[in-house]
Length: 196
Length: 258
Image (cartoon, rainbow over all chains, first blue to last red; front, side):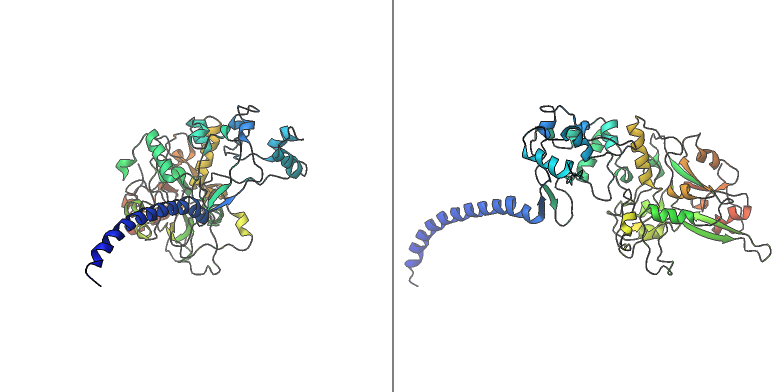
């Protein structure tokens, strides 16, 4: 109303606004991080636990001494068997060897009733993609860890994250990643090399 | 474009169909439909909308009875080697020519459904999906997991059963080989043909059955005058059948490959 009020109030208010502004900025930053890192992934991805908390570390070089292809094998027709069947587990775990609760669960719920474990796959391709493990492992001599996480250091199975709308796994390799490596190694990027 | 095609590759797949052996039974069409996860519409009477990657055409010599002669021409995708018409017109690279195998691809997830390729194909080998596929209850269990199903709004065509090539290669890799033996990779139609009229194989392998049959005197291709160099060859000892393969030529004799 009065002309004196406006500049004084404006000056005082300016200091307050600067402090409040920083606070707002910090709050906004925290909010953005919470939404971006915690809420958003929970909204777009479903998270399913594995039936058994599998310990890769205990089975690998630091434990039972198995290599990746000790359990993840090729079939005779050239296809990759992927996640092993219960038969593989029974070879060593007909009865419990240790005291881990997950091993007890394996014997009780799956080995004794001879029921396949409903493992969930972390890495799978969409329906229109053909991925040949034989071409990459047998011919190109790539290590498993080139594309997959190094499981020999992991002692637990994290939950499987799947995008709710597309149904793709969080670990699904992007076409760009495939193409980049093919281009680098001089392998063909023609559509029908990978698509079906 | 053929100038980009010339790469060092030991493979180029092709098909030879002996029309004198073909009885028009349609087993090739049926095996193709089943191998490649086709569905059947409730009413298939509108044949313009029917999808058949391997379609059997009937031709006659046009003579009145008793001189009428009939032949059947099974028509898959020709996988044209030169200026592949569909590849030339596709605006989104949903179809390409694989210089390693000579197979012309179709990527359903990339196709935008503009249907330029359908118009460009001189052999009517391309089909548009007007509807999403619907399988009767329980029939999805019979689907082939090696072949992706198509959705509404995309174009599809014969792939020379490329998924069978992928599987055959996998088997070879595990056995430590890169090259396939003749007969390791054949299409579903060639396998199903009861009279063995369809032969499939690597045309670049001089010992393969296909490479030998292509050189037979009765070999011809459809619409050769267009210069698209189809990789599907036909055999017939009947000159009127060979002439009908190039129908627009009218009364002229069909040019034979050298």
